[in-house]
Length: 588
Image (tube, rainbow, N blue to C red; front, side, top):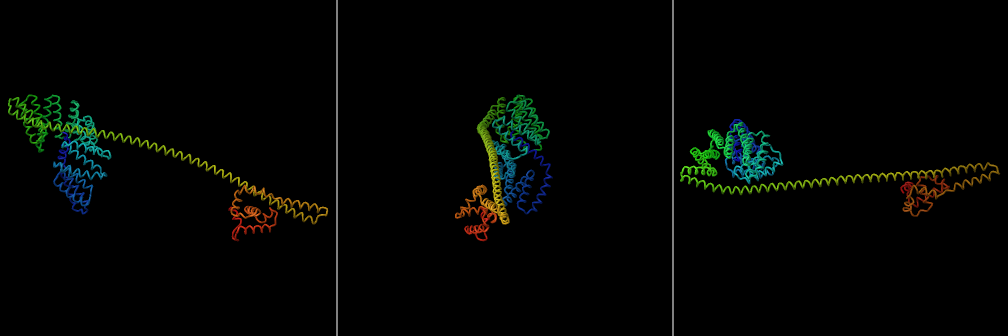
């Protein structure tokens, strides 16, 4: 029953393909023309793949030949992505032809390539879906679970369409139902149904609706189960999918059998048989396990209703069909009731014969059941272990994320603290710089003021001495023309003025000078240690850019004496005629 949706989809595709044959032919003709015209290897391989894909529904043998031709070209040009697509399409062809081993091998080859080509994750995802579907169809549920888990992991890393995501949830629901995780199965089926509705996927909406009904049967909620079955039946009728109707009616028959509503169950079973017989006129190979299952269950209902003669006809008919399909479950079930029928009729020979058959198949079923239970247990443990591992991984991720957040907050705090500290340091540095600038400015202003005082002092001395000299000269001239009684007094005045002019306080000048040029004497002595005191004083006057005349006036010496002193100073300092004495002293 679990592959109901897959069977329905295949049948629908069969009918749809009949309606698109003409369109496909037109497209195929265009591709064939392009293939003949193409000389580029990769392009030709791509076109062959497209043509093979189109031929898949209408001419599967030709599709396989085209795949093989494209594969050869793709291998020659090392066109990996196309090689993966061709493995995938070849796998679908083998699966369609029931060559399951080859199909799985091809899908596995596609997977191996596509894992390294995650730029197109939907290809890898659909490969996992194809593999999972094969495993489910073959009851290889451990492999199906592992494959779908890969698909789930991949789906979290990429955007996938609602239909694909819905099928993934639906198939995981099948597996969870198998291992008796009914609540989880119900959750997955419900999610799948919601996604199918978003995708407006009518066939899968109907199929998933009936799947949900089967979960409620297992949970013992028959009324809810019946509502879902009836809804599924209605949807199948709406889209005119008779195969789906037949399956839904059989499920309703089972439900009523469980509730012991045998007459109602028989009505549903008869409707299912009628649809299957009508389908049998256009669909070959209908005599399968499904038809045998329906006929046998009709016989069982009739037996329970004590309609023994009608029951044996359906039981034997169903047994024969089941024998053709090799379904030992149906053979065991029908053989048991056939044996009961013959026992009730006192035909002990046939009763024993079918009882032996029943026992043989029952033992086989019990053996398979034991294996199945072990498998179910292993799968459940595997599933729960996976869930536990995922939970632990999630917790570790959360813990790591929390730790990372803590580190981020800590780093941000340190960063902000660092910025704050940097701002404080910059402010302190700025204040320090500002204070230094202010101190420097105050010092400069003080030096400037002292310099002005020194300049004023020197100018004062110059003006005073110049004034005294001027007065002395005038008095000397006046003395010549003055009366005799006044000449003595004039001479006294001249002497007094000259003595006053000579009263130059070198100590006071030196104090004022050093306040402005604090390191001048030190630098001068280091460079010229042999200079005399008078020569050092002369250097101080020259540093103030005073002329020979000004120096003579302030020291009350002759200009000639100062000139000679300057000459001797240059010689003692080993200065050439090109070197400027003032420039040298200004740098000290």
